[in-house]
Image 1 (cartoon, one colour):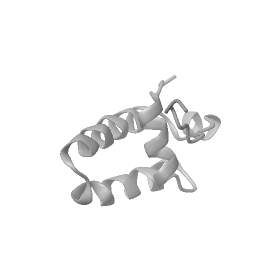
Image 2: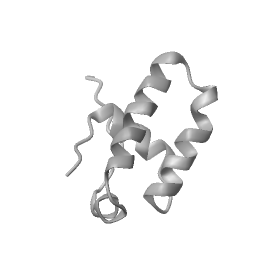
Image 3: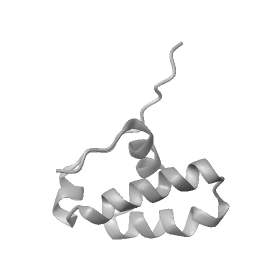
Length: 70
């Protein structure tokens, strides 16, 4: 099973669509508009998404997490 860190999960939540392939497509489309750090995170996330199956993606629950302390 692929494990995502908080930043990767949040990125997936921003671009999440009906399935893994569409989500990956939306992330890829946004790459040119991202700064260098965000592109690196997106590429890392895409590698993990590519390594998992559609069934694994569908079984995961992605919730946006605000990890800042108040």
